Amino acid sequence: MTLLDVSGLTVRAAGGRALVTDLSFTVDSGERLGLIGESGSGKSLTTLAVLGLLPEGMTVTGSAVLAGTQVVGAPEKRLTALRGRDAAVVFQEPLTALDPLMRVGRQIAGPLARRTGLKGRALRDATYEALDRVRLPEPGRVARAFPHEISGGQRQRVALAAALACEPALLIADEPTTALDVSVQAEMLDLIDTLVREREMAVLFVSHDLAVVAKVTDRVLVMKDGRAVEEGAVRDIVGAPREAYTRDLVASARALESALDLRSAP
Ligand SMILES: Nc1ncnc2c1ncn2[C@@H]1O[C@H](COP(=O)(O)OP(=O)(O)OP(=O)(O)O)[C@@H](O)[C@H]1O
Image (cartoon, rainbow, N blue to C red):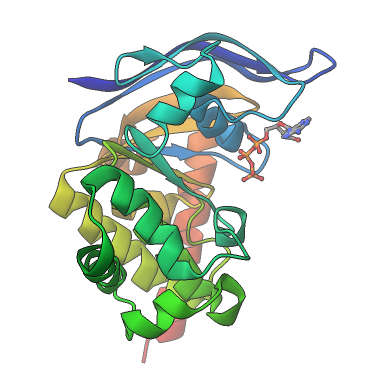
């Protein structure tokens, strides 16, 4: 079943310049699609358009149907109902998603309570469980902390726990590991991979890094200058890229890998 159907999506800046042009793709239930391309290729604007979160002044045309609802032109009330339940998002910088003045536990308990109707002790236990599931040690301590009192890697786990609390059909992850230390990046990626597979959740995973996208997704859409360049199964794109731009992406990912191989050689 098609969960997200984007067709002819065009996003324009306030002055009329096209930032995303005539983009079309679909994500089926349980499918993991990667959006890849260099900085400025329009990946983030695409995810924001899908959630109806584009910055003021931008205009969007075309169609983005999420779980049967047309997002383009939808009133805010309709969009609020979609967000969290049909699609939840984890951004590069978790502080943009977390409320700095609210203790972490409440930020997870809120969406959990809306979905499950739990209250009191049962809600607290479910909140601790949600923190435990994203492998945060001492959930009780983390729940009582404010976002600035925990590390960047822990904050990103909290943002993931909050996104998963509503059990969304689609998880949108926009460069979720880019701002993290390298050692924490791999753990976070592994965690996202495990949790979405367990839940058979669909994923739209945005990254400039092909190696990262290849780890989590089955299919990739390559973007350049706001347009789709090429789309296909990860193994086909990596094994036999058709377009020159994709070949460059693959070559640079391989160059990095072989640099690592050389360094780790005895
Ligand atoms: N608020 C804005 N007003 C005008 N132009 C914008 C705005 N936000 C982004 N852009 C432009 O839109 C284009 C696409 O940006 P977008 O953030 O979607 O790229 P991206 O592929 O996600 O790159 P990055 O990984 O650097 O975020 C870029 O040229 C960017 O400069």
